[in-house]
Length: 581
Ligand code: ADP
Image 1 (cartoon, helix red, strand yellow):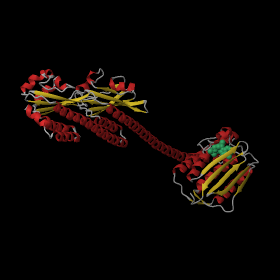
Image 2: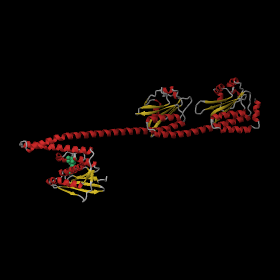
Image 3: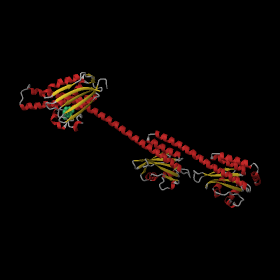
Image 4: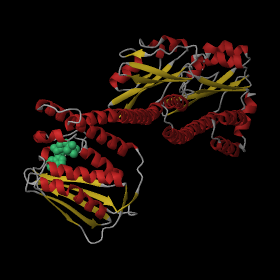
């Protein structure tokens, strides 16, 4: 056996064989195939009777992959548990000078009928990756050439392991980048908060190969609620009060926590330990770097499994994106709630308005008839038709009649106001020039009696407007009666009309007492009366200008006022020309 071994190694075709072996090893880019190539190349070049590869998995602490060829599994496991396979530097053969190192497993070798063993450690830059063990049934002494061949092959294998690891790392990085992009895209499309939270919990676990995860969301600054991924339904996920457990520690410090021996930590949660959790990674969900919305908590359950720096970086990036989404979703929900509350309030307001109008209309209707009767009877009494009256009785009757009339005005104004607000107006083409002429005719006598001069300034041709004649008459009645009321004798009331950029402008101005500037903004409000005009209040209801505004707005027009105390007041009405709105 020993002879044939040396003969083969020294034969002339060793170099091409070596070159072939090197090529085979270097062409491989995954570990599974590498172990097959190791077996075949070592078999070809060093002719062992059995071979074993042990490979230390960098991602699983303390875990070794074993691959045997022509050696029973049980034997492999037994020698793998002995320190001999952990030799990191030497090549040992028996019988050689280092034979004593083999003695602890001598009996194991003997049981399998093996006589010689050689180990070529796989190590690079002082990092131990594993070893290749060769077994012979006979006493074999490796020549320096054979040792050199073994060492060379081992170096090539080591070199390729590094390549394969780098390649795998790059592939993983690329995959993660794709998964992260996919994550951002999906996250942007989700709006419902529970869906976002469950999605983030799931993705974070999948991207870090965690077995389970839970996303903790802070509620009212005091409690953390959990959204699980892959946690058995039999496990109860209790909310955590502020200050309790690892998640709150992450929130308080704003720093991630990574544990390779989770069960040993004093804050480890019993239910998670029961699930067999070994490693933990927890990351805060921060927005704007200072507001913490919750935590992402990841768990691994395989022995020796741990989280790496790249997992931490990845989950931190997920947490940042999740933070923005959670924030947006909350703002969106808040916005929706507010909008719907506002809409309900508006609907309620409209309902109330409608009810109020109905009430006022009904009341006005009910009041009008009895008021007419009261007024009629008062007039009859005052006329003496029912017998002559004493002076004091006449005065009382006059008061009753005046007040009854005031109430009638009020009821009329209210009815008109409600009608302008709620009813669709019948419209017709209106000649405003004629309307103004009628107005002057109607109020001319009253003005004269009050010592006032009334004048109109009209263009030769006045274009028509589209509107409701009764209502527009009401507008000018109100403006002219106010002007008459608030202008001392000797004053002038002017009604001027002109056309300006497709609108008709009508101005009613007087040289009366004017309206104080600070109250000017309120005179169109219902029931508003200027304080300093108290002596005139018995003649009005405070509804006239509100009605004016209501009617003009219903005509798609505008009404404005300007006034100077002691000098006079001007109301300006602007209406669209017929067909020009
Ligand atoms: P009223 O029935 O009291 O006249 P209005 O709504 O018509 O109610 O007017 C509101 C208030 O605006 C009046 O009470 C009055 O104080 C003031 N006002 C209206 N028109 C004039 C005006 N031409 N000159 C001075 N004050 C006016």
